[in-house]
Length: 478
Image 1 (cartoon, one colour):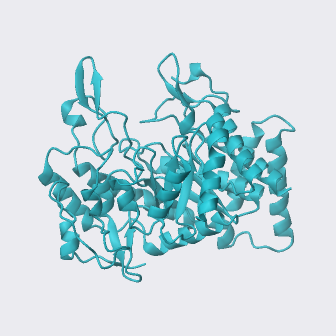
Image 2 (spheres, one colour; image 1 turned 180 degrees about the vertical axis):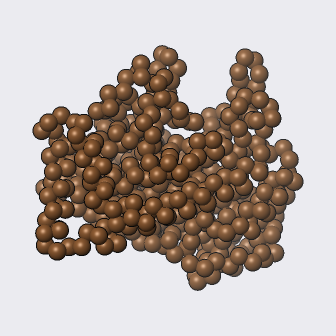
Image 3 (cartoon, helix red, strand yellow; image 1 turned 90 degrees about the vertical axis):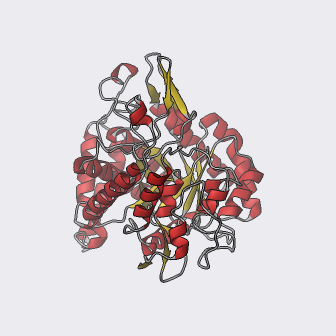
């Protein structure tokens, strides 16, 4: 897991500005034409325009010299787990904030979201009888794509807010001007977040008995005889049985866990600056996260984001909507994973229930025909965002449930593996998505609507979704 951190002439060149960056070739790269800065010769989408190039170069240079946030060995462990899930022997749970912020960062918030992810994973593990891979949208999920480069308020046009690692939300010219030093500030917050998560993951907080007790608190709020109570009672019976036959549930297997991190690969100067050569393999890893994904707005085949991702060894998620056609998807998979390595590519489907039933089968058939190894997971939230008459963006829990049901139905009909799901959620008691046992209505949205971007499921809604998916997994097992 060691890295070559010395600054070579090649690594020094990668810190130059977007306009000045030269073409270069790295002997450790995955092809003769790729190096961590080769994306600079491609068309770039969703990139902020930094007015001060010198400050950008200085920020990139600073980040190129800091310690990695994650290590190559951890990334390889994740890929191995994803490879098993690709073959039907695992299930991927991705969850976390829509967009992290500097102002709201604190230990309790990190802990509470981590706790809900662990609770969800326990339920899903029992439901599917397979290991659940836990990946948090955290320690790097700052930047967000925007439909427009600028925003107009009361006749004043300013750059759009693109996330705390790019600019500030306040509607002033100073705040909205992209500031490269915010990338450095984001790195330090990511480092703190990872320290907190690693401490909780290995320090006993993930104790399976404690997680089950927390789940029972949720179940107690459901109706007597409900499906949630039935499933929880079976989990309880399983734990009692293990204790009775002498299984040590105080061992590390039952008290510790792994949580991997992921974020959208959007701000390429940041990603490049944190890319390192693994000294044990000579391969490039983006050490900003264990996994990255390419968004719907940046997955153009001959553009910068795909170019960057094709050369790093991290698992790569590819978000697709109904706009994606089979031939395009197969070519995209081939570009990112030319050696067809299992666990390298995760296809994240975001369409809405009706469009998913119509378009997903042909995409699955196209990938199957090509022989490509991918893990299919559902993103049931992004295709179900609506705006209320009062102006709040929200998501209906029932619409999210319908899309997940459609995702599982299609895979069941085609005999393929529905390998996981990806949600925007928080451990906070927010009122941003309507519906579910929490009973959030449109009138409740104003009470605790705190998101910096899109609406998130709260802890109770997230657990309810996990129970519903777990029941579907058990049904599929027969």
